[in-house]
Image 1 (cartoon, helix red, strand yellow):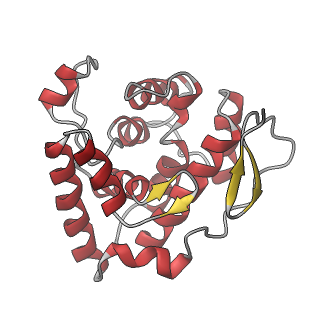
Image 2: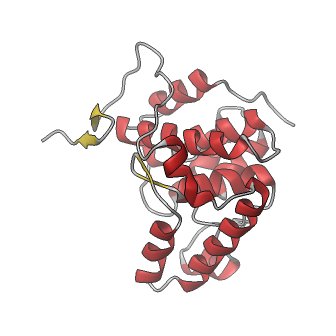
Length: 208
C-alpha cells in the first residue's frame, strides 16, 4: 500500500484545510459512525475504511456535482495518501457508476464500481446517511428511482443484500442500533470550518 493511512484527526484536519464546510465534515463523521458499526461484524481493513469514510466527500470542497468523487480522489493523491484510499473516494457514489453512467455524466474514464470490501462498506455507509441522519437504504434507492436511475438503484439493492449477508442482519437495523443521530467523534480543536453549524444532534443550521 502506497503512502500512510491518516488518523481520524488528520482526516478531519485535511477536510478543513481543503475548505470543506462544517456540514460536509459532520456528514463524513456520520458516515464514519455507520461504517464503524458495519466493521463490528464485517472483516475489513478498519483504518482504511474509517479514513475512506471520513474523506469520501472531500471533493465537495470544490464541486457538489457527481464530479466531486473524482475530484476528491485527486485531492487524496495530491496529498500523498494511498491509492487504495483514493479508489474508495472515487467509487463511493451510490453503489458505483457503470461505464454508461460514466459516459453520460462526462466523468473521466476509469473504474467507478466498488470492488474491495473496504470500497463497498464506505459506499454503502454513505447510502445509509442523509446529511447528518442515519437512514435505511430505501432512502437512497428512492432518490435514484425518482430520477430514473434504475440501474443505480438496483446496484444499491444488490450491495445492501451482499453486505447485510456479511453483517448477519439487515443493515437497515443500523439506525436502531446507533441511533438516527449517533454520537460522533470529537473534532480536533482549532479547526477553521465554514458554513453550516451543527446546533444539536438533530438539526443543522445554515447561516443567512
